[in-house]
Length: 60
Image (cartoon, rainbow, N blue to C red; front, top):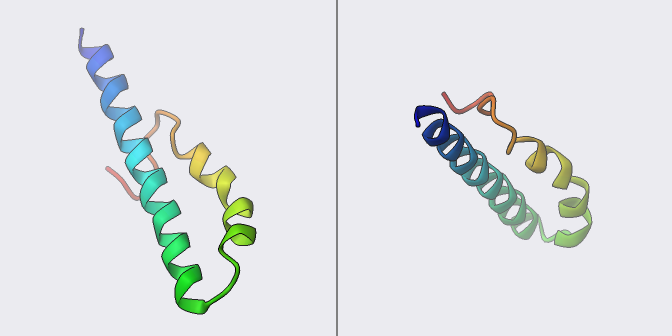
């Protein structure tokens, strides 16, 4: 039972982290006035990598 809760919690943390990273990128792009799409497409991979279960480095 516990492992299931842990996996769910980890996925939630990963998704939240990914969303926060994506949002931060978009906000930063908009402030600089650059094209959002270009840089965002390049930054998709690290966001996806953060969804794996060892929690991302910033989140403990």
